[in-house]
Length: 337
Image (cartoon, one colour):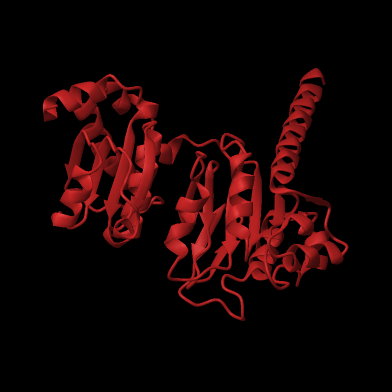
């Protein structure tokens, strides 16, 4: 089959069946590619650096390759082995997601390439993902350590990203491996999981991940502020420190969930969290790879709900639905008066 024939065949595929693999060296670039590919409705197979690609087995059939790396013999051989249809090479540097006008312009340029390649002008009519998320009504803080990726992923798999909530995850993780965490968490679901690399705002549909090497704090305007200093203490990031900060800021609009992990990080400031009327939940220790962290939360006497990752997701959906019903009732009562 010729290159033109492959492209014509690709045009007849539903967008959700078009597979894309990204090879990019810059972490921020990979975040932007991942965000844009998903916003087009395509199936993102992976988003990796050249070295990460080299460590993987032979890639499956890939329709479109996006290459923002050295286009060397290794990359050429990998593409050739994938039964590909198209390769896009050469991209400008993506702005950070919190630089909304510049980011939207960069994203539109990439969408224009897709639209021209696939004869899909409707892609250019779609709103940029940076601007289309719903306003959030509830902040959800997730804390995890050993065994956490599996538990948090199962939680996300059962939680619709369309809910008016935003997620912030603090996970004890190896600094050299932290870049793999978003790909682990958002495989087979449509959450946008991204490591915080600059000050930005909480957004519904996103699971922002606290960095290992720098502190973050949240403020009352919904900003997550990156600080030029390392985390204090033994644990990085410091779950207890973040939990208290977010409880002080968001009060009853915060739900904190502690998943599988070793140690007691997260249980240091629970009395003050209770005073702020924040909700505190934990994964069932019997269903955790490592039980000590959620068990410490339960033993504190402040934990309000315990369950499996799936049960925690269902409980959160119920809480959101109940809050929305209550708000509708309040509005209805006011209109009657």
